[in-house]
Length: 213
Image (cartoon, rainbow, N blue to C red; front, top):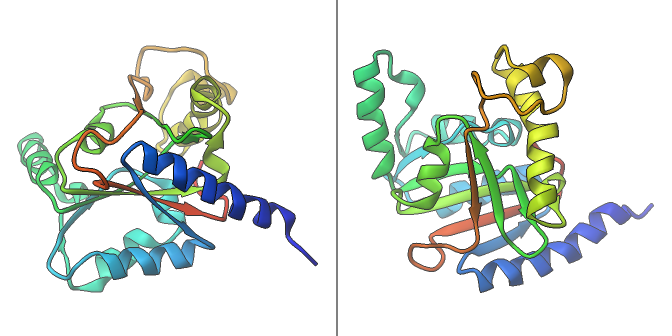
């Protein structure tokens, strides 16, 4: 039996690849999270310094476990920092890493990336710093435009993330955005219209599966 949802995203991915390219971002279609994991491991040279932003997608795809267990990379893991000073130093190491792995909260049909952050380190490294940024994006993250992308993030992704992080926010209690300010993880809203570094610095892997929130 045909999987028409799968086939439709195959076609949409080709459209997105073209539109991302026009925005100086590279993109690649992959049929599954497993294929995305294999491609990322294949494309990152041994000895590279790798770090990542918080991402349920990377966890769901098994990418973080694969990178950590490969034994061929210089892993820069922010979770190993215990003190405020160690965390500050870790940010510096992440900023100059070779590869930064992340997902995107949403991607619009015209190829813009939409991300909302609490502290802003993930969005900061997307904008500048690491030499290469690999963005893993499940098909469930595609939205018609920026406005719908922001609504999706604040009403679907953020409530789930606050529950995952055990945060005491209004959206964690009611399941949708309450436009809070105290303890919010929606402090930074970043719309990436185009890659501001060298063309292709940002590479988006378009995965034909639902991943993350």
